[in-house]
Amino acid sequence: MATIQTISMAQGAQGVCDGTPVITVEDVHKSFGAHEVLNGVTLSVSRGETLAVLGRSGTGKSVLLRLIIGLDKPDSGSIRIGGEDIAKLPIHRMAEIRKKIGFLFQHAALYDSLTVAENVAFPLQHHRREMSKSELSDRVKQLLAEVGMDNDLNKMPSDISGGMQKRVGLARALALEPEILLLDEPTSGLDPISSREIDDLILKLQRERKMASIVVTHDLLSAKTIANRLALLDQGSVVVEGSFERLQKSDIGFVREFLKQS
Ligand SMILES: Nc1ncnc2c1ncn2[C@@H]1O[C@H](COP(=O)(O)OP(=O)(O)OP(=O)(O)O)[C@@H](O)[C@H]1O
Ligand SMILES: [Mg+2]
Image (cartoon, rainbow, N blue to C red; front, side, top):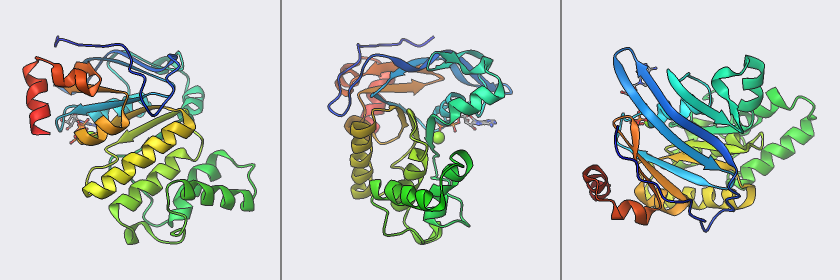
């Protein structure tokens, strides 16, 4: 197994880490046929904390997020959300837990045939059926205002930029007031200015909502800006974990190469 280097949790500028683990991933393995993708991943994230997961393309970052949200099952190891092992939960309990998780898919994944406002309303219509039409519309506007998109309510996803789509995806991920936020490549495909705007938005959300967050990213500058801790995946496991400075001081060849090329 690869060496794991760890340091104690950093108290990031953007959040209050109260030390309660909300997500705990322990020795998780996942293969697809003969292809072993995750080979003993261990990590944890506390309330108010943001962990950035970095790694080369195809290294299993998106697979890891899918396992945490319960869209797929690990072959072995455990994933605990708020202390509950999600592999052992009945479907109805998992559905409850999933409502606590806001997820931004790698390609924003908005519904093409729905407007911006309808996309954000979608989870509310399904899970907050008690809301009146006017409450729903107010809430959608408020969520879109949080991400700076309240002037684009009636636009279609195809009529807005990639950065705007990510913002709408974020608003939709926040709709059910999640305790956990999982973001898969929130800045990929964006120009540097839009990327920094998304970083600022994530920092603002973290300050205000104190969620436990995992952000998968290729963008080292983004990881450095938004995360309390970084974890670098290689060959199916975490090879180094800690602050950005910790990664910079690592003497592991792969870590040095990764930082040089990013
Ligand atoms: N459902 C699946 N069936 C078979 N193989 C899969 C499946 N999902 C993922 N894989 C494989 O697992 C590996 C890891 O995929 P994953 O999407 O997690 O990579 P990633 O680290 O997110 O890459 P990227 O940075 O390009 O998004 C890839 O080789 C992929 O082909
Ligand atoms: Mg991916």
